[in-house]
Length: 300
Image (cartoon, rainbow, N blue to C red; front, side):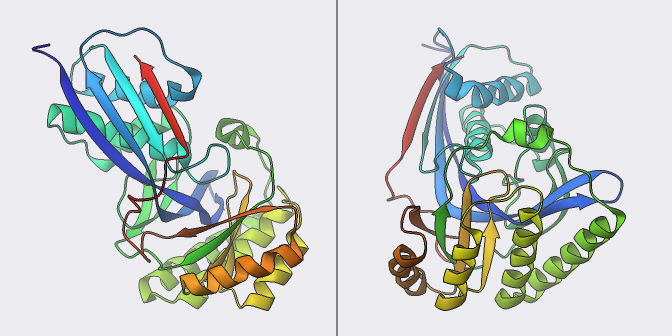
């Protein structure tokens, strides 16, 4: 069709958060950890539409927002292919939505500012700030950047799935009450993490991630935590990272060899849990060769 426009975009996922918490003034925040694993979106603007499967509703909604932002009310079709499973805390929804926005940008030769993308995303659900390059400290329910660095820690991660699925909207709808002391600690730990990121201190980054993981065991516990902690200690992990609104805990290592060796030992500690190794975007570039674990198609 003459008015039909095709575009493609992609976005990396994230392994939970290096830290997540609340700042004074009722400001939920997180610091993301971008992965090499990606979601890819392909959009066709114009050409008719039918319906939207549930699996694509969030991404289709952000496509409509992006089109409205440039004064278009066009029908479209959308396909999402992803290396990121749903409900596990790997930023699958965020990656899908950002990839969809970037596909619209590609189709229309249009560029949106990161702050504008943040508003589009948070109108739909809290997100992980992966539309900012590098590592970002981010107010994930407001879509506002706190600080970012171009550097991404080069970690190999042994992901351990503690089971089940977590819905991002439901997780963030549950209001948690923090004491003044806890709020102050969150602020201190955020400052420590940002300083460690500026200094590129992997040991310090891992230590703060572990503090956040331990703190959240009191409010949103994950199973087998003691066994996973023992595995981390035996195998020399730099730290433990938490997929706070998900099911994964991750052990952070300096090399893929260390992560692979830890995976072999995992059977002795958590024999009934699934494991999977990941790389951060800082350790390696986008993993374009890994298989897609899910494909969604919709017409909007």
